[in-house]
Length: 83
Length: 151
Image (cartoon, rainbow over all chains, first blue to last red; front, side, top):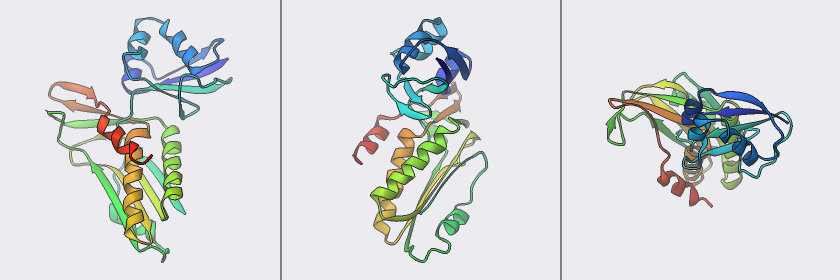
């Protein structure tokens, strides 16, 4: 499974980059998040449950149970503050 | 139905946008608009500038979905949303939401509905520069409450 992962705002800054391509055997957005949390302190700080992390699959807001497909795009970001 | 969204760094001319939104549509008897601007103070600090980040693609998609939902719920003839991104200064315009309808009630309601959705659902993030340093703006609980009343 190949997934493009994108990060925005404070989460992007904490991780240090805005996107990356991940190849892994994961089925859901939550499983992807769990995998990212094993990637060291920066990821843990950016994506830990103490932060309010919102997620989107293929540019639509989703929850952790959303099913990934090959070449999909997943994004993690804080609550939005536009307007 | 005229529905359009623009995400841009440039400023916008409200008069021009309103004239365009209702041009050649004689059904329109009401135009309601909201303009959001950069305040010089937020959360007790002076704000010298602000940087707006967004999620290209999802932003346009989510705002288009909001406008389509507004068109289903309210009897409106058109809607226009402009949201600026990039570096902004106090007093700058940030966002325009404009709606047309036959009578004022539908325009007022749809305009507020769209702003409440935009504040809580469209993927924009503000980072403001204050004397204490740059900081990401926190989401407000009051914005979620404003959204909840629409069901």
